[in-house]
Length: 101
Image (cartoon, rainbow, N blue to C red):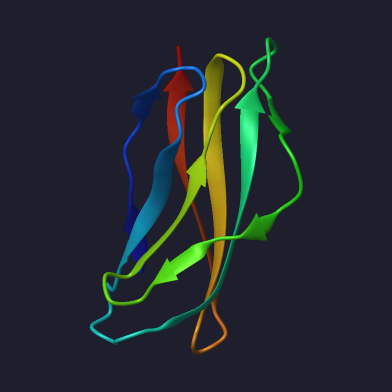
């Protein structure tokens, strides 16, 4: 199973939806049962720091998506890390990036 995402541009203070789409690559159907996310910001030393505790993400099983809405308070490069549990108990991770100007 994999996921698809792309980097997007944001304007400072803008609220936008960020999420990932999972794709079944083994031919088996799946249901997302739990999804959480955490936001990270790139630092000057090219590492990432957490911007807060993990929180629940919205699950859209019709389209195999998980997402949240983010409103960045500072410019820079961010990513949203998602942790997703599917119905067989497997935990999957995916992330999407965005740059704030």
